[in-house]
Structures are given as structure tokens and as C-alpha cells.
Image (cartoon, rainbow, N blue to C red):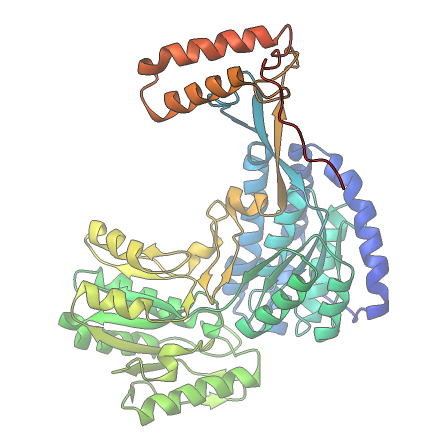
Length: 512
């Protein structure tokens, strides 16, 4: 079965025309009310539901995803995101009133969220629907047009996204371009988009950020991770075992928020390793009716095997059989890991999980933070207060308690990393506003002839401003006299400006 045909590569020469069409389409789209845009984005969800079976099958065939994984990780998350826009977009983009305070008393202030223009979204292959469409739809929700560059490894998935969006949205509002590699990225930047949202490796993200910075193009980066999973002795044992299996081996470990470092309190280290090993070996591996599918790239297999060899040379023990067939790697579980090993320091992005014991809370926090990455984490304990305390000490953009990995998909919670894991946030209200210019608006009723700090600059104004300073630093009640004088002065200014001081101005130096 071939659910979608491959999308042909886009000639780089067509990129200027793509940008021109996007800028034209964006004008009418930005003029719509937010609630009307939200309804059109729900049409994307409806089209995805109509063509969902074909998309799931395409993800299964082309990306090697188990069907349930494709459905829950890609299709469901996008539909949920569209529903979030329908429920919250109007409020998220509504102007926010701000207090004028004492200094600006009598004025009105509001913060407005204004579309940026055209956003370029560069997306990866591991969750090709979720990580392409959610940032793209977020940018659309804010009133922008989008040029989406999905992963070239999956041309059929790319065509499926293109067909779904074309059926739901106005022409040229979301355009899909494919292929071209680095040259395509450069061509897109040369058209000076108003923002770039990039998801991918740290190295590629740095290169894109450098090129965007040269053009002063704002960019959000969602990069790699080396996420810690911390299991205390009082954790729900069976749930933690299941969570470790899913967190480490979902999508064959090819998830930016995979559990890639497992720290288990020494009190339960031995029974936990034994139970986890048994659970891992029960996972079904392969293409059909499987829990764990093949890896997408042969280079990823080489990385996993190299990390395994390095760990074994440095004292780790492989607890599961080593079995590799093509790009399919059976889940690998390593015990007695330490931070001298590559598998504990460098992103694996594959089905390998190292396990390391710890003794104290302070020790495990230090271990969890001993990483250049800071994307996601999880803490497991029956003591929720302790789990929350530890979660708050871990340096990461997100953290889950007694759960793993899937918190990335909550449409209402901002997601993104710190340190080498990236910058910027998407999802939630913050993720909508991330694709907006924030504009400040001040409204003066215009009823006064002049202002205290306008010309002429007088001693009367100076005395009044000093009184305002005193009232702001000290007690307002202790400086009521100052405030009354200012109020009287403001009422006077409604009729006429302040008279100039009687002292003559100093004589200015004469020109040569």
C-alpha cells in the first residue's frame, strides 16, 4: 500500500517566488479575527482525521513507526494542538491592559501581539508530523504565513502534509518545500523571512543560527537532549519500569526527549536492573505488530554501537543481547555506567539506555545537571513534595514527575530547552506569542495643553518631579502633600503650559 506519493524536490530557483506568494497570502490571513483563523486551523484537524489512516500507514511504511506510535505521537498531537487554538487563540492574542502607575497617571497602556510576516519552519524526520505542523500551525495561528521545509528523508509524509494543508487552508499560506539540503536553507534565509523555527541537531542548529544572526533574523532552536530519569527507592516500582522502557525505546529511542540517562537509587538498584532487563527483552522489535521499529539512518546505528563499545571498554556491562539487522537495533540496556562514558555525555538518539546508581538527593541532582544539554527530565518518587523539589533543581526546560517523554505534547504547556538544547519556546500561549511582535501602545486623552516634563523646563517642574520621586520611594501617605501639588499642577497644565522661570538663561558659547 502506498498512501501518499513522494513529493518532488523543490528547485532552489523557485524559493523567491514562494516567498513572494507567502507575503501576499499573509496579508489577508493576518486581517482575519483570531477566532476565524482558529476555525480554519480546525479544518486542518478535520482533514487530518479524514486522511489520518493514510497518514498513519505512510508513517509506518516510510519512517518505520509502529502504527500506534504514529497515531499517538504524530496525528493525535496535531489534532490536540488545533483544538487548543480553537479554545484559547482569541484570548492569547487579545491586547493586554497595563497599569499606568504614578508617573503615567491618566494614560492608558496596552500590549498588542502583532503577526511577524512569513515564518520559515525547518523540521526533522523523527516525528515528521508533530515537529513540522505544530510550529507551523502556531505561526499561522499568530497570523503569519509559513514556508515549511520538512525532512527530505520522508518525501511521502511531506506530500501528505502538503495535501492536508492545501485542502484546509487558503492558497500559498503554508507552502511545503523539499530537498536542497544546506543550499535550500541558505536560499530561504536569503529571502529574509521574519522568523525561523528550527528543530534538529545542535551542530546544524548552530550553523543556522549563525547565518540567521548575520541577517538579524530571529530564530528559535529546538535541539538535542540527554535527558535524565531519576528513580528514588520509594518510586512506584512497576510504573517506573514501564516508564523507563517507553521513555528510552519509544520510536527506537529517536526522540529529543528520550530518557537517555537512568539514575536509580542504590537501595533498589539491583532489583530494578533485573526487572528492567526482563521488561526490555519482552519488547517486540520489527516492522509489523512491533513496539520498537527500525532506526531511520545507518549513521544512527553506528553512533549507538560506538557508544556501546566505549561503555564496555570503560567498565559497563551489557544486560541485553546485542542484535542488529540492517537499521534495526534490539534495545540495549547497560548497567554500571559512569560519566566517563560517551553514552552518558553525548546524545544517543537510538535504542540504548545506560543505568547508574546514586545514594543521595544532592548527588543525583549534580549528576543530572552534569550535561551540556537541558531539554527534559523526569523524577520518580512516591513523595511528590520531594519529587517536585528535585525537579525544580534540575536544569532543564521541562520536567515530569512519575511520567516520561510525553509532556512535550501538551498543547498548553510551553516547551523548549536551555543550554545546548536550544532557545525559545513553542506550545501554549507562549508558543503562539513567540511568532508575534510585541507592540506597546500608549494612549493619552490629549486633554492637557502640556506635560510637566515638556518645554519650558522649569524649577516648578523640577520640584514636582522630586516630590514624585519621594512618594514612590517612601510612604505614599507620608507624601500626600507632594502628590496633591503634582495633581494641581497637572490640572493647571490642562489650560496652559508652565511659565518660564524668571532667571535669564545662560549665554551660549559663540561660534567661531
